[in-house]
Every structure is written in C-alpha cells, then in structure tokens.
Length: 331
View: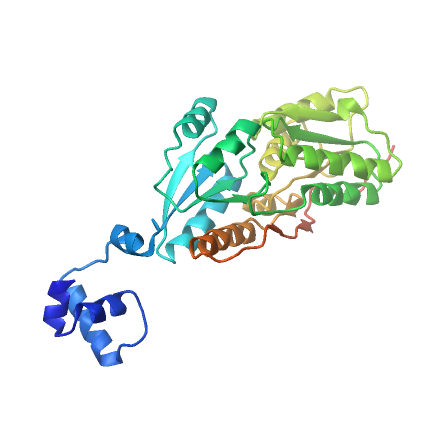
C-alpha cells in the first residue's frame, strides 16, 4: 500500500479509501490510485481487511452432498451472492456419518468464519447444540433448527397442493414414494410432505392405505424400485406423488420400461422444479430454490454486518402442471 501511495503521490489513508470504495476521494485521484495499484499488481489482503473490521469475511457452508441437484443449485446461488460481496466460502460435505461426527466433534470452522450456513441438513440434538460452540452466527436454508434464522418453504402445504391436484382430476388410488429422512428433532421435509399427502387424502374422503406409502433412500433409483413395488400390488395406484423430481424421473423411466402409459395408466408428480422435470413434462412443485438461496445468503451478509434479520422467511411454491398427470383410467 505504501508503494501505491508513493507512486500515486497520495497518502496511505487515501489509498485505503479508494481500495475500500469509501467516499471522500475525487474521481481523478481515485482513477490514479487504481491505475497504480493495477500496475503494481497490488491486491487488498482479505485477512488484513477482516482483522481491521473484526471479521474473517468467510462463511462456512454445510451441505449433505453437492452431487444432488437441490444442494448444488442452492450452493451455486449462495456462493455467487457471497462472492459478489467479497466473501469467501468454506465448503463442508457432511452426509456420511463419520464426516458429520468429525465436523461436530472438532468444529473445524471455529475461529475461521463469521457465519455457518446449513443447506437442508437435519441435525440431531447434540449436533444442534454443538453449533452454539462455534460462537458464530448460524443461518439455515431449506429447514429449521432451534431458533436460528431460517428460510424454507411450507413443505406440508406444497405436498398437499400436489395431491389435491390429483384428487381434483378424479384419482382415488394415490400412492407416494417418500424418503427415509435422517432423524431430526427439529424439522423433517419428508415428514412434512407425507403429512401434506395424508391430509389431502383425508380432506377428499379417501383412505390412507399403508401399502401405498413407500419409503426408500434418497436417490433416483428409488423411483424405479418404488414403482415396481406399487405396480406389484393387487390393486396398484392410478397416481403417484414422489418426494423429488429425481425420484420422479426414476419412476417415469420404470413405468416406460414396463409399457405403462403416463398419464394414461398412471399419473406422476415430482417436487423441486428441476430443469429435467420440465424437459420430461413432469408435473412438479417448484420450490424456488434460487430465491431461498438468495435470502439465506443475504441473511448471512446482514449478520456479518451486524444487522438484524428476520427470524423466519417462508418462500412460496408453485404447482407446475406438465404432461405426466391426467384423469385416472376408466374402469
């Protein structure tokens, strides 16, 4: 910085104001300082700037697995929002039990970040309590944990909307392929969506049939396996509500492979708003992932700036009707 000041013929304070975009410097002087800084390849040290402000200018993002579209899509927007503010991201994938144990035992992000942002990561009681030991702000995206500020959708209402749509088409034998959500004392999207499904059936005067509820691990192949189980029943369903678009894509593939017409024989809905759902014409619930991510990132930015944030933000969802749903087959 001293070299830049000498070359530009200004004080260190002026260089500091220019490089931090502070007011009080004329346009010509500002251009001269930036020109000399560029010529000398001078870059402001984030560590030094953060130390002066009493912050690290870093956010730790905890995500189960970045290979899942939902997590990757949310991470992409969060990272972009933070990067435009000059904030670095430390990424921790913690889906595997040993990685979760390691993180919440060792707390590697302690003293390294200003905010920890969790993306759709259900925690047990001990893990949630360990977050407090980080002694930093916590933001939750896609779920709710204790009293930390969060942004999410109303999974119950969204899943009910998907099932309501099927009942409005005249379906009475409606099944669901859901997932084995990790145990959480605070929030489970799978449990909330299952309640939306059962509440919709009850409101329509339909029986909740246990054999129509298939629980499987979260992967696209679960759609294939779930459909095989449902089609093997003595009275198979005429419609299936799936936990995610990825599972719906697996289900669609299995139905096509078996010569089952969609929606002529079986109607199918997904959940998420995945681009592939639109490509394959799957009726889905768009949960506005990018908007959830933007809100979560701005929460983190405001907390770093010692600003207050809303404790809870619910982002709206939209039922996007595609080619995979229609009236039930005539008997």
